[in-house]
Length: 612
Image (cartoon, rainbow, N blue to C red):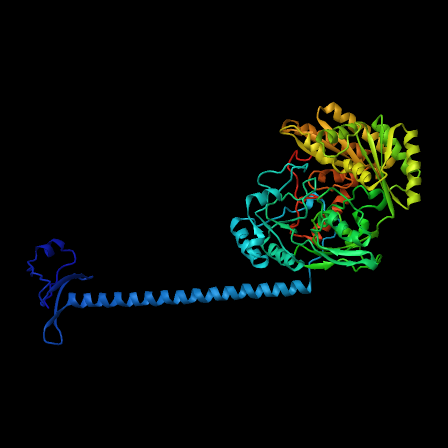
């Protein structure tokens, strides 16, 4: 190695030194590397050559490249090792976090069972405190439910046909006008309590709203599926399960019609009194707490149901009581479900009371000069305690409709008319007819005729049964029917009928009056087109308001549904309705069953509720 010493400050001298430059050839094994080192005493220049193990010279550059390569390889290996450790560490952390979460959940659940949350302290549920119900009605969830339902009842008993969906959304005689979106996604037809229970368990798990359907003759929007979901139609559950003639009761499924039932049990001289409109079925009759023309003598549906089998919102099946005529065992859940309109549970069986057919029956019809005279006659008959079986009123417009529609063989006098039904022994019926005839004469009766044969009896009573259909028959194109009912104490009935009839005349819309006036209940059958819809709503609103102010009820037998829902607080008080909502929440916390009927389960939009 050659060495050159120079002064530290002699920079120019260093540059002037003659240092031969050797050629550098990368391909040659013989490479000379020269470099300088500057120290305190001066600058040193080094050039190094060495030999490898085979006697060849190994250059400094080769050693350095080898060193760099090995260092890079070590660093790469270390990085790969670190990355692998990081992956293993991340997986371990994930398992650790999962374990901690599950352990915390388990401990929390255990502690929750040991120290449960305090129950809500209030006895009522005001609308201001309610949470909006949440459903899962997306197409994927409903299609998956379709497969579940098909496995239970068979594919042929689950329908998505558009006509079926339409008929299960509303009817031509309903007062409610549903929106196009308010229809079910599918209709399911079960055949047993077990199948209904299985369906409800699926709906509860999947959070699908449900509407029960039985007959479809209701008038206030009872079966319109405002939340979509599914409709459970009970038409396949139409069996008379057991008739106990000696006990005067019968067990039936919900799709048994009251007319068919009376036809079957009539062979054994038995009789089921409630008689609402034609086509009504037991399930719907229980849901609305209906009555009919016989209610004056025999009472409403509430008096003729002994026991119910009910499927609750989560699929639980309960039976409200056994078959004895009376019981003081616990809460009367039977009465709770009657009139609940399918909002608390689905009735799948009912045990009904029966009575024997009366030995003799007859019908009388008498006409009056004014509707007030007819109402006064009813008040007189009821006030004297005459045991007539039924008393019905039809105004002169209703009698015109019956004649014009031609639905009966007889041509009627077009005046306010009372229809009386009598039952009992032969002597008792004759006495009742004589008493009523005299009372009718005293209150202004213009005519009085009574049936002398079964044919005449059927002919005279047929006009009453055709009232609704005959009014619908005379409707003009574009007009729809609105049938609304109210009930008041008997002494207030003449005033209410007179004021309502006068209001209809002033409105310019055509309407008739018919009712079970023996117990203070009457109906208006109003025809209106789309342009008159608001006026019709206002007219019905005024009728309901008058009834409540006269200490009456917003509905005598039609039920609440959607149309009468917002009138309940005015009749019963806010706290009473809040108590009903609390019962609804207790039995159906997810609000799956016939949502929005009877009581609101969601806060209304501004302006949605009309001013009282």
